Length: 114
Length: 110
Image (cartoon, rainbow over all chains, first blue to last red; front, side, top):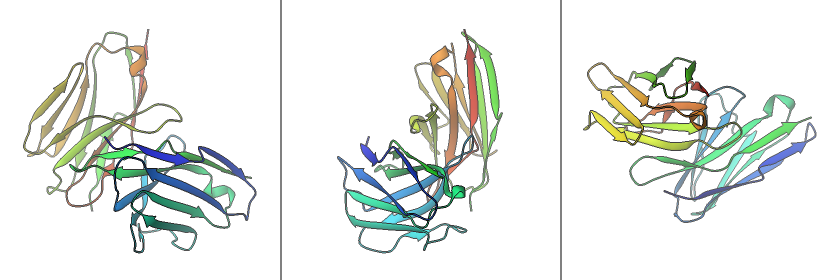
């Protein structure tokens, strides 16, 4: 399967600051990457689909101006949480789709906003 | 869109027993059904998947069954071991992205 690397694994920031999370596909050229958010003891909720060279597609209820996604190359997508607030604290996970539909996930990034 | 229901939310078994987790889906166009295992603080790992042209698939102690008519699929783990303890997610997809169930926390006691 695809090898997906995500960085940072943990980040703590002050309310009002912005945080950038990187997702790299190490062995697979990904025209599409997916960003999920997972609150404690809950399921994976798709936030947006990151498209290489074009705008991301956001799920209903996800603010595109708050969660900025950039997919500038076939191996890198970034998620920036702008003006973070405590309610944005969560586990953010990116994923890459395999050729036959399966998803391979990055390690995840745990964001804590103080 | 797709809606995936997963039961039970928690499951406690004794080591060596079998565990069964069930999921139903709503979109008859869905044709891919993976299962993921997620340990605390870790990424979800694909453990087995099944496609709509197959009714059952087995990989050592893990098996998945699919009933397309009833729109439900199940994960079966036999001879459970403490290291099987984790949260298990089912998912379904057709022509769009995966929709996940809410997860089942499996606890295997020694």
